[in-house]
Amino acid sequence: MQVLVSVSSVPEAQTALSADVRLIDLKDTSHGALAALDLKLSQSIVDIVNVHRKRKPDTGITVSATVGDNCSSATLLQELIQSRLAIGIDVIKLPEAIWANPSYHDVINTFLFKHIKLIAVLSPATILDQSTIKDTLSELAKAGYWGVMVDTIQKSKSLTTLINLDMLNSFVYSAKSLNLYVGLAGGLSLEQFDQLADLSPDYLGFRSGLCMNQQRGQPLITEKVQQLTTKLSEICCLLPQTQ
Image (spheres, rainbow, N blue to C red):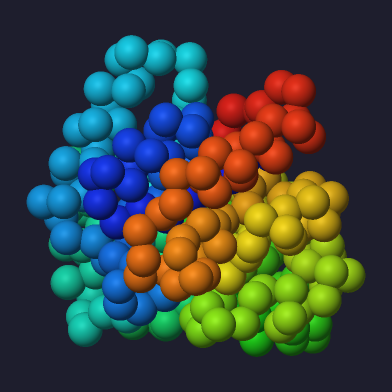
């Protein structure tokens, strides 16, 4: 298992790298839940990650990025994805408003056909719909998505207050059975780490729980990021590489 930490600046990325975080997520944390980070700033972060990779080639760092909570056109979506791939982003996260909208499927499929790693971000409501969630996951796997994750929009409510552990466990199990790389995120705190790690997701995503007053728009607290990776090391003797 791994931990994913969302960053919105070069200093935050350096904090995550110093704590041996292996999944670095680029996101404009001052806006929407999946707001895209400025491309120039994203490039600066990728540059320091690449320096770190050269210095420590065995760390296996993966950089993901969002393209926004929504998109005005399929053409713009293509530009948003392509521009991030061009600067060295490894994985692109797509919100449900985009991946579930047929208007964007043709553009998305062009990237899936090229085996670009795309993650479909599912809302808690979609996970809670037990009549369709397994079919949804199956369709995403067949389409060629690399992974899926659940994340919340309103960070004032933690994921575990919206979805009980049994349902999260079922989601993780179903996704893994389809060979999807699966993550859990949404207002998570350090105190929730152990109970969610027990569900064996491929990763847990953190942001607000690592910031001052649990406010995701505030900078990361170095000590909390270190505490997170310490917790991870305590349960993982050997950290598996991402798929």
